[in-house]
Length: 98
Image (cartoon, rainbow, N blue to C red; front, top):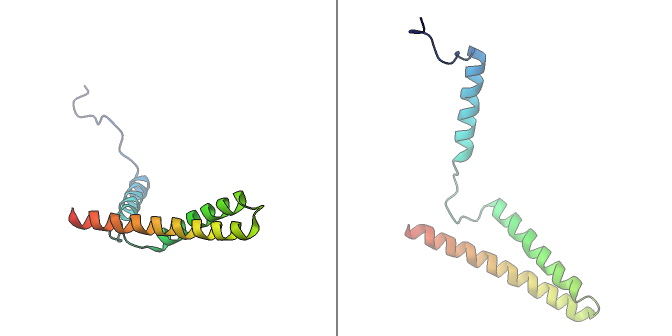
């Protein structure tokens, strides 16, 4: 009696079309056009936010010693920026070898 019966009911045409559109959207979103280690806009924004936060933390900790606090905050900002950009260059170099 159960010989030619589908195990799961088929999706209605509208639901199947929606599922196919969602699958196509997910697959196109997953593909990154930027090369590994590229300096994208998102990378620059994240780098600037991280470096500013670190500079502000160092500035806040050194606040009672005002001229030194500004120098320390600026140095921390520039140091964090240099480290993050250096890490990105290393990522590019490793990606080019692979």
